[in-house]
Image 1 (tube, one colour):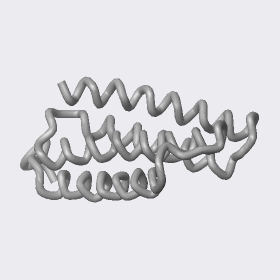
Image 2 (tube, one colour):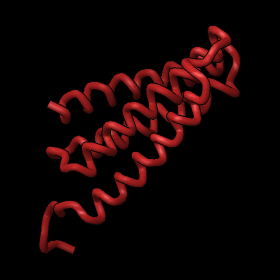
Image 3 (tube, helix red, strand yellow):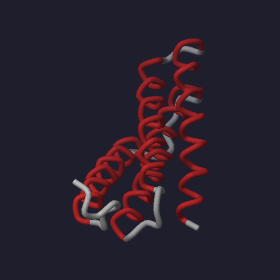
Length: 121
């Protein structure tokens, strides 16, 4: 269930990243929209990587932190760019911290999790 939901969210985040990049170019406010586009696109790829197989605890935590981080960080950048307000105080930094945790847990999951193709180096 988490794997399929992750893949669906990754597709949405990837599409949003492309749309945000276009909006940064054509709709103005690239200072806010370019970072949101970058985060959405890179996190979409990371989430797809994490969803390749059934997640263990570290992968599941990385996925949850990644999804929450994208929503908070990108959501704040978009609402600030187009509406002039944040989701809530400190929502962008909270999203950024969650994204950093997601990347750290991704590294740990691959360092200490089960290996695919065991015996091949």
